[in-house]
Length: 207
Length: 256
Image 1 (tube, helix red, strand yellow):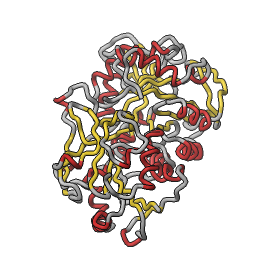
Image 2 (tube, rainbow over the protein chains, first blue to last red):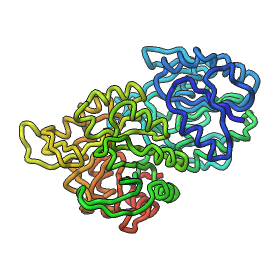
Image 3 (spheres, each protein chain N blue to C red):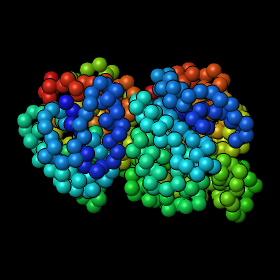
């Protein structure tokens, strides 16, 4: 069973429908007390500060910590990925969940003056060997929409990289039963659908 | 590397896709969601649905169609037409649209761009802009004027200045449609596309005039566009998305 965390950060319609296309019936919850069991999807778009406020107000910070400690598969998407880090530069500095040590930074247009911000569109992913990438080719394209990117302190937490605005940034991170993407698999065609399909059977281990 | 995008636009009139020439005369070409699903399978990168009768009928875009599209599609899509304010934007996004395109409303009530960006994030807010070639003047130094109401009503505003203002107010992307080339199939209007793309910090989608793959090559290179929008090329002229993208790749343009 898939439980989707709804903490008021954007629209969950497309992520719910993506799982429905795979034959799942995801459960959306708005408070940690509603969680029963199974895999957790932690999506979200919007700003870090309001996202983090929503996460804490619903008790999802404790839920995510407990899930990771117990080895429950958890997948973060976009803002849901960025909030896993220790902190973000966004909104004058925002404390994150610190489930993965590191920071979240704004793309610097002085590194590539013709780069558009937000980074919007399809970009290619070089990925590590990990069960979540089963059936996904190197340099497959995924759909991104973001202005901030994560910088994990421990390079082994970087599971995939993408090039933009003078950076080779961490487009996928993970640790233990935690896996997170900056791009939107629910809007990334067949490659994205394959990633979500893999999440349905992933045991929450690295290799 | 960020790839260039091929976008297919579906003009929806009374629930059916139509294709017009310079906003006059329309022919029926099919069911919007069925067509969109086929284009998705054919490799299109993104879709736009314009409910072209919604505005005149004082209603929001067809939300049932948006919901059907959201269920069927695995790629991003934008909806436009008939959006009257933040609540209509919310309804379209909740029905499953990824972005909402604002055109005449943004010109008449530019605050909507700021309100929409604040409520949903600027990545959801697309400025749709129709630009028409006019003599260069002090009021319109770019030589392109913004027109609204489907190209019928001039605004006296400079297209380049409006693009910059709209981005400052909250637009996260600009879909720039050139009225003079729209439906003519002889190529995009490169000068204004390049001017706008070089002047703003957000992605620019070129629209209006595609009739051959080379036109897309031109607008994605010389025109500096981030994405190229086509309609009749794939609806009625027999081109496929896969075929167009193959030509773009051969020309050295990075595509999915």
